[in-house]
Every structure is written in structure tokens, then in C-alpha cells.
Image 1 (cartoon, rainbow over the protein chains, first blue to last red):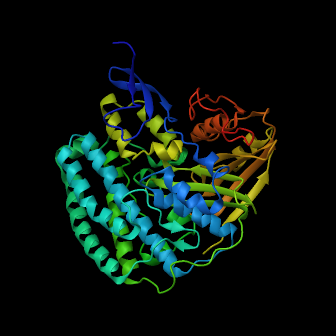
Image 2: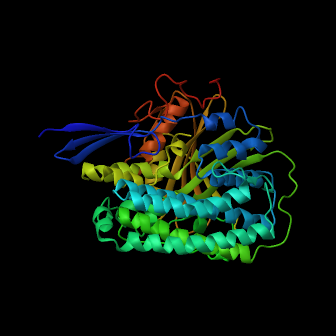
Image 3: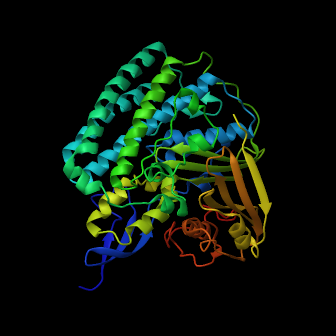
Amino acid sequence: MGKIIVPFGSQHIALPEPVSFLFETENEIITNVEAHVGYVHRGIEKAAITKFEFNQLPYLTARVCGLCSITHAGAVVHGLEKLLNIEVNKRIDYLRMFVVELDRIHSHLLANGHVAEVVGYENLFMQTFKIREDVMDVLERITGNRVQYDYQVIGGVARDIDSEIVEFSKKKLKTLKDNVLKIMDFNDSDYTFGLKTKGVGVISKEMAAKFNTAGPIARASGFATDARAEYDYLPFEEVGYKMQLRTSGDVWARNMVRFDEVLNSIEMCENILDNLPAGESKVKVKGRPEGEVVVRVEAPRGECFYYLKGSKQKVLDRVRIRVPTYANIPILKELFVGAKYSDAQAIVLSFDPCMSCTAK
Amino acid sequence: MVEPIMNIEEVTLENVVEKIKQFYKEDEWNFITVNGTDLKGELQIDWLFSKYNDKNIIQIFRAVVSFEDKIPSIVPVIPSAWLAEWELGDMFGVDVENAAKNVFITKDSIQAPLRADTKF
């Protein structure tokens, strides 16, 4: 049989968001691929330098992505605080870390649920989403929303937490941890699940380095990179952060490294709740941003990069956003070539792609 | 907190590929992205890198160019750079070597949206 072009997206049953791949296939093997990523371009970078004042940017950048809105707002807040010379207290740092790690937990569980669905495990998908509800409840209680959180603001956080929320969160996190261990065990040991995920879409450590791979995708290949360890923005090590690595670099390893990170994030959240420092949840903000700053934060999907430039005006001169899915598209494109078309869904979903972030 | 060290090296379009080639080691430096900033009449281009396993080290190669200049590609040195280069071309309406067009914005969208003189 000759070459066949198979379109995958922009609307496809396996894709949570619009992206288009045109696969050139020969006998079910992908021989070439073309990617289109601009279906949801919303002009956020342009809006940030024309329509919004700097103090509104956390609200705007939270709209880059519904899932990791905490990360985007956090990155721009961190950058603006640098440009405004604002120091925040330790309670604010701890509250920020708490929501950042909760965000990672729910995002990772969502990703692993999607992978389960595309490899044919609908019940596992539903179970994963069911247990995820515990972390959604905690996020809702703290921020007021289940998605699109506006929690981090310049100089602090939008709401403090009290002892009732602390106890509520501890209880939910304990239940979540027990449930995650059960689901993780299934992912780890089920024979058929292994057949569909082990040895599929393998990225070697060398490939991960060559294509500047980010986040859990890199760490699942044993490539040690994590903005939490490489950029000082919050004191993660104080609360038990440990970089999680797997080595097989396949769909299975990407799922497992996300589970490892969920467990580490739960441990960090528990440590934060047990050691929450006293203090105000917001400090005074004054002045206008001046200078340029580079910010790197670890979003659930990997390193999220911001560049901000201001010249003492209400509106910044430049806001540049580079998200982890964007960083991982080059390796994803490489990985498709030589893969079976039937594995394409699992490979894509194992990357946990976010096209809203990428196109912004 | 450790304050980030931002090393900025001025380059030209003629020497940037060679400078990056001499500097870059794939297991030592993370290529972050290429960033454009409209300086109202000129374009500032930053090629940004961070150091693996070393807190807060950022290396920037910076060139200030005309919007009519042809921007060289660093893909022969860094294979993952194509996406950032294509985006630079789409967002600022500049000619980047070997870059496909209209990947980030469709043909019927407003073109070069990040140019300061593009209003909408």
C-alpha cells in the first residue's frame, strides 16, 4: 500500500483541545508529520501590553489556561514583584506553594485519566477523575473556583486560610493519598495496561536533552530538570520537594512519574499545613514596574517561562509567555516518526498537551 | 532566595549562529525560547538559555535589528528551535530563515500582532 495522509485533529475524539497533526503513513507506520497549533490564539501577549494595566496582569494571565491558571498568575506576580522590589512574607510563600502543588495534583490526575481513556480503560479514567474530586474540593474551598483560579495577586494571595480549611484540607489529602496509591498500583501492575503503554513512544535521556524537553516528559526519561530545583521562586525544598525521575521514557513512565509527583505534592501540602507560618496574607504594593525580568516556574506540565519588561508606566512594554507544551512539541513531532498510527493517541495524551497555553 | 544572574551578550545577525554554536552544550544548557520585543521601529531579539542543575543562571544573546532584516535560523545548532523561530516570524512579521508562515495565526487573522503599530 502507498502513502496515506491521515488527519489527526483539529477536532478528534482523543483530543481535549484543538491541535492538528497531518500524519503521512505507510503500512500504519508514521513516516512524516506536520503540526498546526494556532487554533485558539487569543492575543493574550498583545492584550497584556495594550489593554491591561500591570496590576491586572495576574487576572489576564490566569486566562492563558484554565487548569494551570495558578501557575501563570504566580509567574507574572513573581516577575512584577521583582520589578516593583516587593518582598513577601513566609506565610504568603507557603500559601502560594500550597495552591501550586494542589494545582499540580489535579492536573496530573486529569492527564493520567485521559491516558487511561485512550488506551481503552474507561473505568480507570472514571476512577481517576472520581478521586481527583478531593483535590478539586480543596481548591474550591480555598480559591472559590474549580477552574480558572484567581488566587495569587501582587503582594500576596486573594484569601487567607483558617484552621477549619486546614483541617478540611488535611482530611481530603489523606483520602486522596490512599486512593492515589490504589490507582497507581493498578497502573503499575496491570498486565494489559502495561502492554498498551510500556515501550510505546519511548524518549531516551539523550533525546530529551537534544530537544530541550520539559517537565514530567523529561523526568520520565531520567533527564533531571525541574524549575522548582533550578530557579528560586518559592522555598519548595523546605517543605519536602524531591525531584521524581523514571527511566524508561515511555507512555507508562510518563504516567508513573506524574503519580510519583502527585504523592510528593501531597506530602509537601501536608508539611505546609503542619508548618504554616504566622503573618499577613498580603503586603503593601506601591510604585510602577521598571526594568526587565526573566521568570521560570514549574507548571504541572513542565517549565513555564515569562519575560517582563516595564518602563515605569501602567502598561508593560513586553510580556512573553513560553509554556511547557510549546517546549515539548519538537520532541513530540520527532517521536511520531516511526511510531504506529494506532499508538498516536496514547503518545499525544501522555504528553498532557495544553493548546490553550501554547497558542495563548 | 538566590537572585538570578542574567548574562546578556550583544550579538549581530551575522555572528549569532556562530556565537550560539560555540556556547551551546545540550546537556548543560536549556534552550528556553527566542523572544522578540518591538522597540518602536526596531526589533530586539533575545535567544534565551538557562543552565541545568545550577540555580538561576540565565544566558541571553541579544540583537537589535530592523524589521526588514532576514533572521538566521539556529535550528542546525538547536533542533528544537524551529517552533520559537516560526512564532517570531508570525508574531512580528519578520522573515526568519526556513520558517513556515501562519502556524500560530491563521491567514485571515490580523498579521504581525505583536508589532507596536498593529492596532486592533
